[in-house]
Length: 204
Image 1 (tube, rainbow, N blue to C red):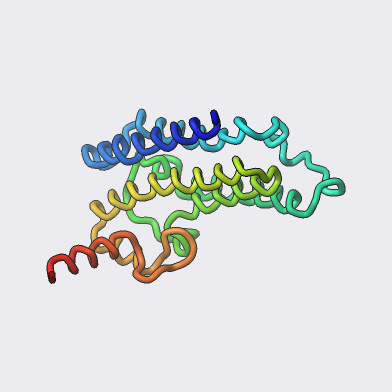
Image 2: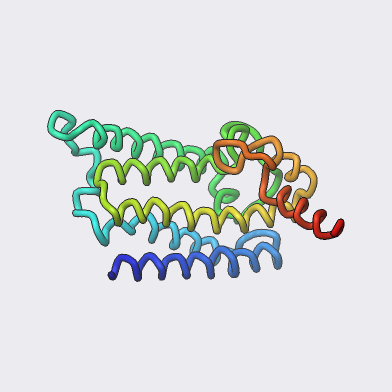
């Protein structure tokens, strides 16, 4: 019961931070203030530490798993965690920490991994989360996978709204050409869907 309550509490906190405070900071200053940026980090730190509520302490020591004693899915999980961590933090450093934290938005970045996905660092984080789930499979761990996806999506929606307001047609084109996560959809992009919806209403 405490796991469910903690998950709901984290979702509520993420909604307040990403959909209210972060959105307000972008609207007022065109970037995130340092306290709001730190709140973002705090929310994601809480998500990453969430398995501490239901997993044994050994989940933090994933690299110590003996591949001769553990089944294939746990060995696969180890590699997914390593690759997810390296890719997520590597992309953040390549992108620039100030820009990644919303402190210094300048131009729309479409190079490197952002040619394949609009949120490659989130994909790296998701790969890490799935790796932990493979190592320590359980119903609460499966819920954690969904929790990470939901909270990340709240953050991404706010960033998309800010980027659309900042870069306009350039970002709209980017949304059409590059998927939000990994696989392209039709119609492509959150804003494309919203515009179609508004257009349909006008024609009624």
